[in-house]
Length: 293
Image (cartoon, rainbow, N blue to C red; front, top):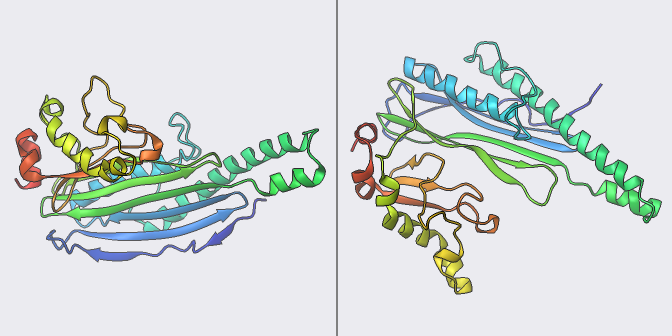
């Protein structure tokens, strides 16, 4: 029987009413837990809407789907899930989080143990290392880490914005950030807003996107005397809109590019915010309405 060491595994639920101008009946709950096994650490930080309205109920279901996808595919191979979706009442927070904690911990334990056993076998078969050196190498093997993060970042009377950015480290050279990124929901319907820009916006927004990139890279450029083009890997010389949807916030739309999307790993995840008044000409009428513009 596998034995797990649980660190703070009991769910911490906190109800939080909106303090950013949202309707008072839109509330969320927060869950936080950290669990460990011999060669793995799993952290879950999740914020979900309470199903106090029809829209919030739809929104909660979508975000539970996001959590399910992430935690049942920890090694990021989307074609294979390691356990079934939770089939209980998604509004039963205790049962919901308990299920995903235990299932995801078993999954990451299995994956990390398999990698450890394979590496340890290779080291112990070495003919060039002493027994002492072999055991030192084995003892120093790093473990896996997975941090699931889902939080509400902003809301208005019309929309609620959540962010899903997870960290995965599989005992290699470095970890990576994965997830759905920013997700914007219509509060009334609970539906996710995926489309923000009119056709051709990417080309027409080049000067804005370049200004944003210059702001992000200015310190790096100053440090090594480089140009913006030295940091970007572009097709046809155009800065693309990010694959993740933009994140609405108080000051405008925040654009976040994933690792390797337009720049090398060492340059991180380029991020910048463009004011609503600047992006308004390129937004779909529906997006303007949802954003209250």
